[in-house]
Image 1 (cartoon, rainbow over the protein chains, first blue to last red):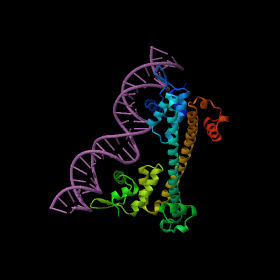
Image 2: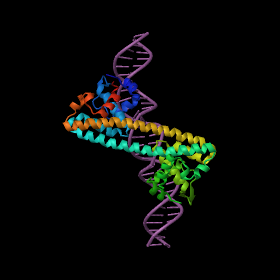
Image 3: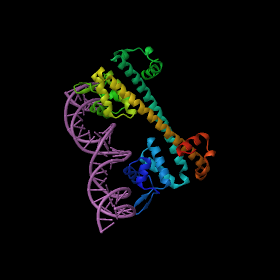
Image 4: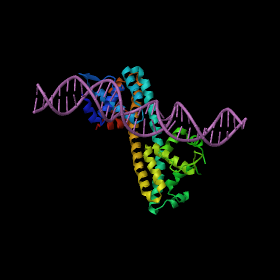
Length: 147
Length: 147
DNA sequence: GCTTGACCTAAACTTAGCTTTAGGTTTTAT
DNA sequence: ATAAAACCTAAAGCTAAGTTTAGGTCAAGC
């Protein structure tokens, strides 16, 4: 059994945030003694999943629904499966989007490191695609829909 | 030259959002005719970068700073380079975190697809690590700091 | 016995990034 | 010439995910 302060230290989540999660229904079965929350291993496990789902961009309302399903027993297993399958697709899309973003950032890193070397960006700005490094060319053509 | 409505269609960004970006200083040099905004190719280019930086999690205040630097000429080239280099690291970290999240989601997908097959999760819950599929084992050991 | 520290609640406040509303001007089409 | 469509501003409103504040309870150590 852990107090809210111990949980806060373990997970590096502020006490007020944990109370907020509880208020929003993320610990549907938490025990209390004299009004004081007592977190057990189930609650730790729940918090692990909560952190994961939050990082994947899921909202607290949706996470709450999942925890309600967990409490309803085997009849909700297909719903829980579908939730994770849907979330998997969302995370894969997020990774893809970040990789596209990374390509533009890499292009800008190259652009500015060349410009800094020369003290001006006027030559880099005018540089023909064929004179750029190969990996930069690939991005540049994609972004500008050339060739 | 484009009107705000055309920009909105091109970028699939709401008109009110574009006005908000302008109010926040993301188009420091935009032209007006009779009070009506006239977006030129520089503004299109800026909006491309704005979208990219937003997707990478950068706040509008910081993006504004970048656009101010762009207007200040060559003396700010090193600052702009550093900004993109820092942002690159942040994006790489975000991708790493999403991949960790994906591992837990994959574990849960496996867990629930087995449970759905059996109509209950009691056997999957008790399953020894050595009986899990190899890719699932790898995650499980990592997450539970076994072996 | 009293003070300190850890816990509690309810409610107000905060922040970012917009959207909505209300009222007004300009452009375009008929 | 006029009506509709597209533009404008300023200010208020919204949402999520907390944080802060104010006031109170409870257990432990001195």
